[in-house]
Length: 240
Length: 64
Ligand SMILES: [Zn+2]
Image (cartoon, rainbow over all chains, first blue to last red; front, side, top):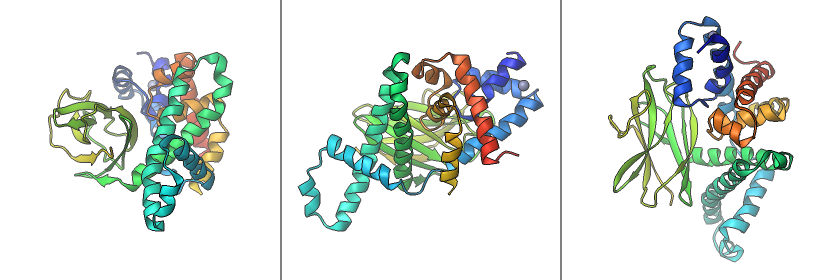
């Protein structure tokens, strides 16, 4: 790859948005281009700030929007909620909000993916909402995050055969290693995606088989493995 | 407070910059997938991710 082409990939690389082939080409270029390496460090710092700035509490307006979605999509009868104690209601809210936020985010993103350019302007609101709800889903996931061996945390919110997987505070790995996610079921494990060894944090939307019971994490050689080749360092059960 | 600042800085981007960065970073899509979703040429999306991040860097004052 020539230098000008490599330069244009740095933003996508900093966002962890390259596929494996592009990533390998850019990484080989970084070794002998101090300019690109320096720019990458700066843009990585921006991406890190974006991850660290997720709000601890979703804004009230968003919570209201999620609640409306719960009424519409989860069909929890209001009277059932009324009969419960306040503490139970709160626990129920958190559990359902996690599901509803994920459902809404997935649905909105599904719409985005299916639309054509002629309808683009009508989608601006949907996209803005999707980005916010992803943030909410991520935050709800973070509240149930589990520590991983050697550092980092994993959280999973699963809904209707899809899971929102959030891994964060990941220690940097050697250049030839990546984190790999696995969907585990009684039948075995299946790869659920790769996270760059220096990503620090990542979200993935994963489609699950009906039998899947947990999402697990291992450290694998760059490019990932067909089956885990090292010990599981993290595991989160699926909320069903 | 950090969140408000990020929000403000994100609003300072063009729609295409903001959408490209959000779909990649918060939703985990590759730039090729983002290009398809936004019905925008791949080289344009690559470029918007980069110049959007540079604009965010200047707005947030990180990276030095
Ligand atoms: Zn270069």
